[in-house]
Amino acid sequence: MRNLRKPIEEVLVSTGRRLRDSWGWAGRAVDSLLFPSYCPICEAETGGPAFCDGCRRELLGASGRTCARCAMPVGPYADRTGGCSECRGVALGFDRAVALGPYQGPIRSLCLSLKHERNAWIGRWLGELIVEGQLDQLRAERIPQAWVVPVPLHWRRRLSRGYNQAEALAVGVGRALELPVKPVLRRVVATPKLALAGRTERAKLMRQAFRAREVPGLKGRTVLLIDDILTTGATCGAAARALKRAGASKVLVVVVARAEGKP
Ligand SMILES: [Zn+2]
Ligand SMILES: [Zn+2]
Image 1 (cartoon, rainbow, N blue to C red):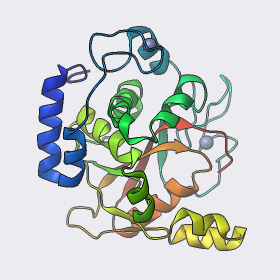
Image 2 (cartoon, rainbow, N blue to C red; image 1 turned 180 degrees about the vertical axis):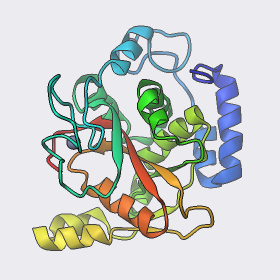
Image 3 (cartoon, protein in one colour; image 1 turned 90 degrees about the horizontal axis):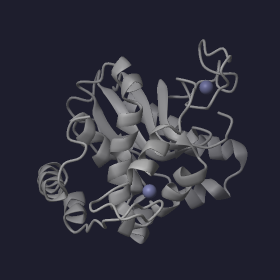
Image 4 (cartoon, rainbow, N blue to C red; image 1 turned 90 degrees about the vertical axis):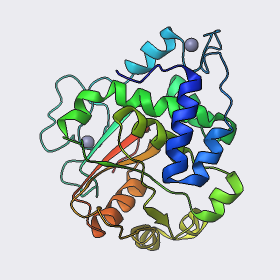
């Protein structure tokens, strides 16, 4: 994988510059990152950023056989025609999904660490690792012109948390695939409001939870929609529908973890 293990100074400079050009506010955050020189999983000294070789191999091998539609792990003999037994016939809103692996073990711990801004650097490396692990699947989708779009947080939550982990992941995915990151989605319904609602109202609120800015170039575009965890697919599905309403032709969900949850 080209570019994946650049010296860190180079990564910081080039990513910082590219980000400043495209979306300055995130670029400032990346510029201030300091990378530790130990593996975030086993804490072994690595002499540089990111995972040690052992943990890296484990992460890359975590996925196993999955459903191409919803990224759920499936058995060796499962029929995957039109999806798996969980998602077949269900309108997901997105076209396909890939995950680094199931929401367990080190992948679960990494997702939890990722919620804190001080660990934004892990998001970048995870984004790149997903691409490396799922490259064949992603290539099959012919994505040379795709845009990378992070699932946004509601502005209020983003303000209180200080950052959105999906953005850090998107930077890694965009960098590994040399695709532009375009934060074209806006979250217009906050999560507490969703949590308080009843089931039917929740579904309705979720349908309106995202808006995509109608920017030139989105029409007919394939989008890689980035989030940390895919569970029932309701969030990514709503975000994908908003993108399609604004003209995107195909939405491929890219996440770190696939958690148990029926679509
Ligand atoms: Zn390690
Ligand atoms: Zn499925």
